[in-house]
Image (tube, rainbow, N blue to C red; front, side, top):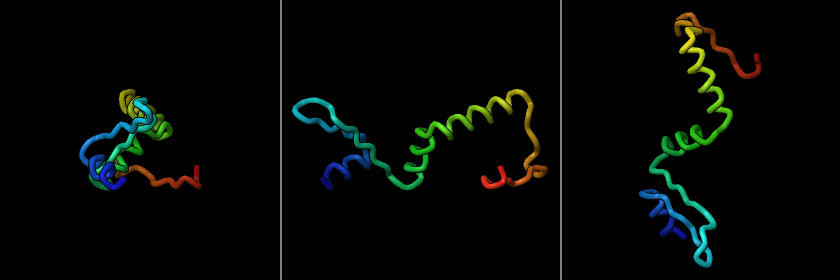
Length: 75
């Protein structure tokens, strides 16, 4: 099993059972790669990103210096 994890750090691994694909092993070189993967595959993050990009395209932005930090509990 460790061999597959080592291989997955360099390339994705398709797991087969009786010649049929049953899994997909994605390795990460470091924690940043793992975080990137989570963001790219998280629908809530993707929705927020699309909404933010649309706001920026339509000029609904504020300067960072004028912004206010809002915690999740305040929403």
